[in-house]
Structure formats: structure tokens, C-alpha cells
Length: 405
Image (cartoon, rainbow, N blue to C red):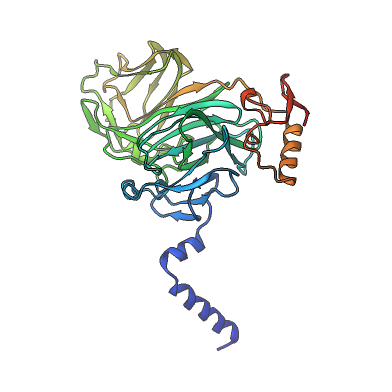
């Protein structure tokens, strides 16, 4: 036997003796279009259930302290990502910087997850603000595992997610995830879409990756009355709603009855966007299912469903304190209204413009070269004005400029 053959047999023998987990890590490849960060984790790893490769957050943030949830609660949530967190006891604004390979001009889903887990033994749940680049995103406050999502098209090749201390406890984060979306979906002329809810209707199951190629989280909701299970084929449109999600639906029993759903926000009047997902497999010869979708009493679209063809109807932005969705069968429809899945977003305005790019790059080069570790030197140097870097002076035209350091 030649030397090369002996070397090959030796390599195979060594590989076969490795622990399964080690082999998976050696073979694992990052998911294309994904950035997945387990904040506070000691090392990178492959989540076998989600088929997602998570990285520790070193290199994405230059402040904070790694912590572990209480030993009494560490096994309460079975997700690996819930075991650790990073806290930010110093500084007002602490930021993660994400650099997606695809860069600016693309649409991304950004998700930040939080579980306090009584890591400090105080049983005091903090409240703090979350910013996306230079604009307010949402206020975080939850005693259980929770997440916030935003669909966002960045103006630059980076995205900064910042946790802002508002004086109500130490900000923290458990995971930070970015997912590249198809640019033909979730289109909005201005602002960003903040996820209000995403439901897999008529189902007992929750799905995300690998069933959903975009890793959207489809929570189950089977509480609507008069439901029936509907089996479907796979989805191949740009929204790529998983077949497992489209496999069930909520359907009223009588063709003359509307399917009505409503939600009320705890906030002041907000702007809503609704994405209704349909698919049909019940049609028999001579039958029709033609539906009209109304949001806040305004007609959005009328659609005739065809077997096996997924359809998504997106509403235009509408303002209101409450949201009312009504799906009605048209006069010629022989089958009643149904709905397979729904996504509801609120529109986040993005009024602030970032610092002029050359100035931004120059001051970050200075920070890196001189290893500046000032607590305030995170995020955008000039914007928002209340969080501008100490020692900098800016002027605020259409694109803020740094005038002195």
C-alpha cells in the first residue's frame, strides 16, 4: 500500500474517532445571508435543531460583560441561546456592529432576543431602549424569553444595533440575528417594519429555520373558532412561507360569514402593515373561492385562489389605534373565507440621518488606531445628538459633519 493511501486511512480513522459534536463543528459552514450571534456565549457552535451556526459576540461589540442565567433557571428554556447573555452596566449607549456580505440596498430581518433569567439574583427586570443605527426601534421590557424584530434596509454597508440605558436597570441581550430577505418582499417606501405578530393559523406548532429559509418565527394560534385543517403543497413564491405553516388555516363555516380578526395597540395611534398569506387545496370542479381583504374598513384587494398557488396580499400602511382585518367571500364564491397565516407590522419612522460617511470612517479609524475605549464612543459619532461622542463637535445639516475633535 502506498504512502498516500496509508495517510488517507489514518485521516479517516482519526475522523471516525472524533465525538459527533466535534465532527459537526468541523464540518459546519455559516448559513448564507445569516449573521447569528449568541451574546455572552464562550464559543461558536452549531445548533442542530435549528441548523444554524452561532458565533460568540467577540468582534461584534467592544463593551459589556458576559454572564450566565441563574443556575435555577438555566434548564427552564431548552434553547442553547438562552443560557448566556451580555450585560452593559457602563455607558449610556452600547452597540453591536453587523457587516452583512450583501451590504447596503438590501432588505434584512434583524432580531434581538432577551432573557433576563435572574442572572444577578435580584429578580428586577430592566427596561431599556433599542436603536437601529441612529433611530429608535423599540423599548424592551419582559420577564420571560422575548424577542423584537425589525425589517430594515440600511443606508450603508453596516448595521448598528444599540442598547440604550434609560435609567431603569442594566441593559442586556441574549441573541442578535440578521437574515437576508428577498428584496421583492416587505417593501415600504420609507421607514422600517417592526414585527407586531406573526401567526401560523389553525395550528398547534411553531416553526422557524430550517422550515423557513428566512428563519422567521411562526407562532401557533389555534384559538380562532370554527377552524379546519387544510393540507397544502410547498410554497415557491418570493415570500417562501413554509409548507408546514400553509398546511393549516382558519376557515369560517358559512360562505356568507366574514372572517374577522382585530387587535388593539397599547400605544397611541400607529401605522399598520398587514401581510395575509393564502393557499388553496379544496377546490372541486365548478367551485370558486374568491376573497376580498379589508383592513380598517378599507378594501385592499380581491383575489381568486387557485389550487396549490400561494398568494400574499400586502396592505398599504394604515393608521389607527386598533387594527381590524376582515376577509369576505365575494357574491360568486362558493367556498367561505379562510386565512392560512398572517404577519402584522407597525411602521417605524427613521427621521435621523447618520454622520457623513467619510467623517464616520475617519473617527472610527482613530478609535481603532489609538485603541480608544471611552464609554460614549459607540454607535454613530454625532447622532442622535443626546448620545454623540464626548470630545466631538458636530454640525447638523442634511448629513451631520464632525467639525472638531
